[in-house]
Image (cartoon, rainbow, N blue to C red; front, side, top):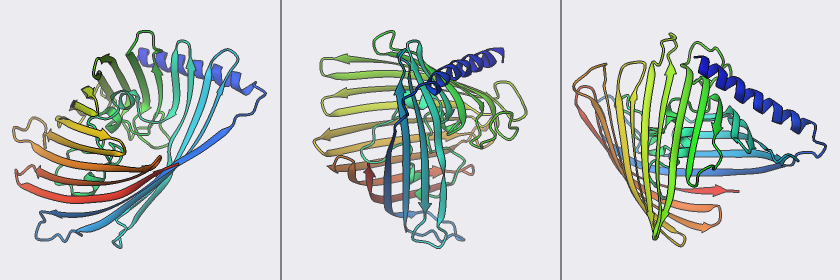
Amino acid sequence: MRLYHQFLGVALGATTVVLGLAAHASEPLAVEVSGRARAFVFARDQDQSPAENLKSVNAFANAAAYFDSAKTLDNGIRLSGVLELNSTAKNLFSGGTRNQFGADRIYVDAVTAVGKFRVGKREGVNSSIIEDAAPEAFLTPTEEIIGDVLKARTGITTRDALTFKRFADHAFGVTYETPAFLPGLKFGLSFHPSTGTDSRTINRTTSARNGVDVSGRYEGRYSAGTYRIAAGYFQSDSRAALKNATKAWNTNAQVTYGGWELAATYLASTPASGKDDTAWSIGALYGIGPYKISATYLASRREPIPGAVLREQAQRATLQGNYRIRTGVNVGLAGFYAVQRDAAQQSWDGLGLLTGVKLAF
């Protein structure tokens, strides 16, 4: 615990100093505005219980705006701040439309000769170090549309299932990343006083506390492409202040060869509930010109009760295609097949097709 407090104090102190230097700068900061808009339409066919009547066709839309400001001081320190506003609408073809709007990310970066410091509301360092758990041509891990399309039959996590973002997503935190002191080598450390996304993060009793994310990766090149190996460790205290109540680790490997990209990721978690789970994914992508195609497979297992011999299971195979019309404008298609096995060992099949457009400006 003392280590956590020391790290938090040093990082906050360093950030306060650099922000103070920026406050004394006479030149005003310029603000750049960018954004994205995405819309998807899908059709699905999945097993239903006698009491269910699941709609087979529906839609999803999302838009976000980014406000970014940066400045380099005379001493070489670079400061930048980012605010992301996000709006989401689901189930557009049904009466149960659900709209969400809010500030997803608010953070400040200070890049110095000794590394990069970040303070604010964002996921920890593991998500950026792992990047994509498996390559996808059209969708991304933050666009877990298929998980929303298929009705969940288990307690298995599918959204950000392979990075520590699943434990501390958009939570206030302090992050430090090492400078490039060795070619291709990078380490990072994040500390979240609370892993909850509520604005009252510090000392909040309804969320896990003292979340620590330690991650690193090594990147290299060979004659025909690149390779990367990454790994991370996460732990946090539960709401009841039990020490190290949640633990997890993950590892990732990636290789590129010409227009091909192959990657695989594995994560094992021991949550405070005692319901251990594992997840892994593997995928391949090929890109040529404006076209990309990919195939990915995701598999997860979870204990429905602590120590259970029979586990909940989920598998999903996805084929995707993407066409870049112009810079920032993409259209794509994704087909998927999934099998879920619940605690009673009953299987639930589902398949479907999704298409959409993605704009970035």
